[in-house]
Image (cartoon, rainbow, N blue to C red; front, side, top):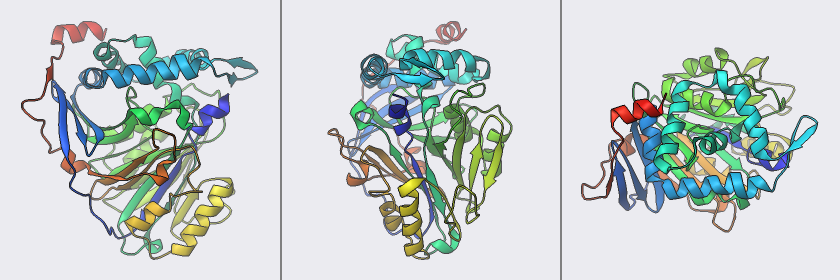
Amino acid sequence: MLRDFRRFTGLILVIVVAAICFLPTTASAQTIARCGAGWLEKVDGYLVLHVKGTHYEMGYQQGVLLKDHVRKNMYNLLNDKGDTTLVELGPVKLKPRQAIETIIQIQKPYTPKKYVDEMRGLAAGAEIAFADVRATNFIPEMFHCSGFSIANSATKDGTLYHGRVLDYACDWKLQDHAVLVVAEPKGGIPFVNVSYAGFIGSVTGMNMKSVSIGEMGGGGLGHWSGVPMAFLVREVLETAKDLDEAIAVFRNNDRTCEYYYVIADGKTNRSVGMATSWEKFELIQPGEGHPLLPNPVKDAALLSAGDRYQELSKRVKEGHGSFTAESAIKLMSRPVAMKSNLHNVLFEPKSTKLWVANASKAGDPAANQKYYSFQLSELLKRKPSADSPVFPMPDGQAVSQKTK
């Protein structure tokens, strides 16, 4: 049912300006394998994928290094759960794969070639059909979410925090394939993407220019004549040097259905809520009233809905002026997070620190699980073990033939 896909976007974004009260802990790390300039490691048990180079090369590195995860995740999404669910596409009920193929054809003229190249690289590396990779990466076009931000007077000392609660059906087992992608695109800005094996787009992330972003969804399902949402978010991560450039990515491109975003810039301590669709573009400043936001709070933009919105508003008012990183994480606890809470993330864009929690294998909410501590600037300095296994990259001629 379409509701099953929309639950993936029961997403809550949190931006909190606060003093950090805890630091990333020293974690054990193990290099698993290398491929070209890319490599895979486990940090305290969490998969961290480093990819670097052209988009095809980054895709190939992910496909090779996460082959088992990519294949299992895609099989589950497209052939297991995806084959037993019906979604509504206008007046017609279709299986997800049928609906996705329709979306792909509509969005083909709007999809940047570099991301098509990356999907082709991923398919080659994982030795699976390009059509399957493409279909999986267009699933986010059917997602819809919620979010909020708080800043300045709402916090203890002015440090910017940006967090997110992602709610989706945990029985789809995406958490079994969770991966932190540390990307260094050729000619682009290095960034971190909290993601799942096989996905190259993003719904949340942060770059080395201290810009972080997350999305939430609304209505307008069916308006897909534009750049796929997950690729617009990805474009922000690898091209936006500040908040204004991030906003311009959405203003200057053809957009699809209704989505809302929270974008933060840790360098300037600025953040904004943004409402977009195929026909509208609207910025919502922190603390600004809006017909859809009945309980404005000073220096806060709360973009959630229903009971979760009410609870978020209550928590922000009660803690106004005293938030720290630790209490910001607590804002994402139940019942703000749903029972289907797939992952929670808290970013500190200025320092590029982040904390990530995932649902358990049994499907228990991420809000109740361990948070893993990382720092993008530190992750970019890491090197793989010289004695780890090596998978070869295809030569330049092979790459050029595959991207045609």
